[in-house]
Image 1 (cartoon, one colour):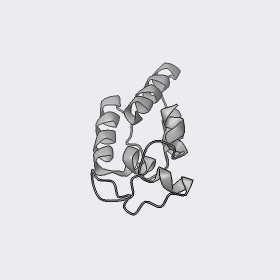
Image 2 (cartoon, one colour):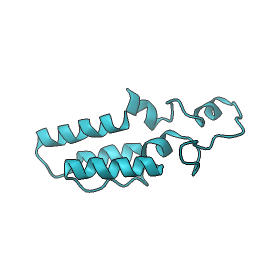
Image 3 (cartoon, one colour):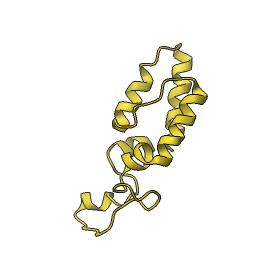
Image 4 (cartoon, one colour):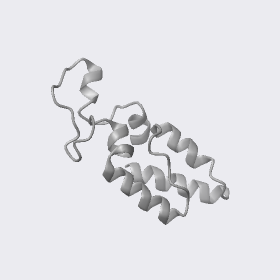
Length: 100
């Protein structure tokens, strides 16, 4: 449920109220200050998120995910990894848990 909502930018972030018509003056992500606080930035593009993905992909022994893509693209990329069905399911579950 969380990832599905994150794909649609409906998780709690500073950018989310803008989609409902609220104009917040400062929506920069406070953790890094590099970009707007959106689901994609928090889960993929922030330097902290990038380092997390580097560690997770290293642990799973899979190629690094393209953090410049969308959340949906990451999940599609994970599903296309050449591993057994059981291993793909485990990698997919680890990906979902990493986002959570």
